[in-house]
Image (cartoon, rainbow, N blue to C red; front, side, top):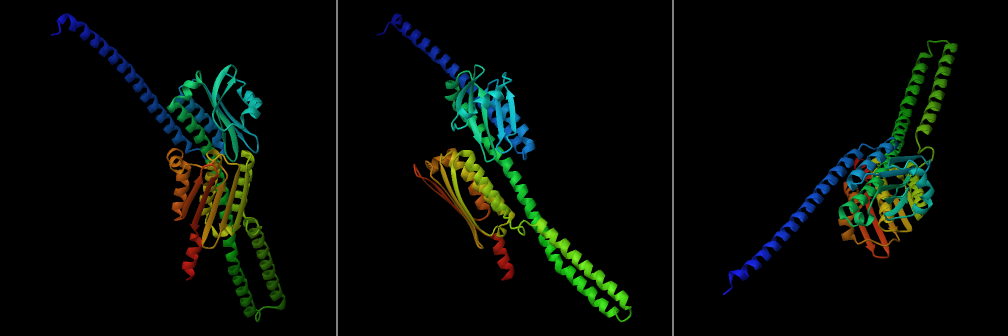
Length: 403
């Protein structure tokens, strides 16, 4: 039989242990609550930024873009200093948002650029005795760097929420810059399409104008019996001059408006420029072959193809770490065929679509909207190959009308 004198110390010991465990649980609960609060704040900040980014559609928006991303970076990372520096690849115009105490930071970045511009992963650099967590961003027209001040890099790096937030904001910045560029390209292609449409309308009206002149000549022949020879000659000269002037004006308008008449292939030229610039910017090789008649493609399909190619090249460089991309595009009468192959490290398709699948989802969505087919094959250490087929709706509709 246990004596009460022996039982009391054991109960006291267990009660003390329970109290300690309860205190530990309360501390952990507070930590979880604080983590959850930070997570919710981060989500709200990112969603607020995401909504704002939809309004950025031109180069005029770039200054606002770098400003908004810098502010969001400070809020999400719970730090008090950050910056975002973007350079236009062609004109070397820079956009810089500096929310740090270092007024000479842009000059420091320029001086250090040859050391950091080739880095693909996030890294730490020191400026003015302060540590910054940084990431280089690139697209077809811009290159830049995103940075946030940190006091303890290892602590921040090991935080899943902060790490993923930083990487997400860097990727979102790249995507937004690319979307601004793509919107400009789309505007250019719409202008070219509209020019060609107007040119075709003018061309179609030529026969009507000529018919009008021929009709006037016929009427003049009837009137010739009742007017003098001098009056008849004046009428003929007037009609002849009118016909010549009309033809010259129409010819000038058609050749000025229509890029097709000038021998240009606006869409293919835009793709060639993009691929050449992208290869140079990322120091890789891109072999491409664009064939067929681009006039067979609707403007919507051109826009979709451009987005798909941009997305595929971006994935090949960012995730595949490739050095060579081979691209073929064939605009046939019944369908459009696109193949994009790289020599990268390959991707695990299941994991990639779960973790970094925004790009693939976008491509699948675009192709699905055209009732096309999409396939992707990838082997670890070998590379990735994408095959796309899209039915040519423009030609199918034309065949339905004819037949």
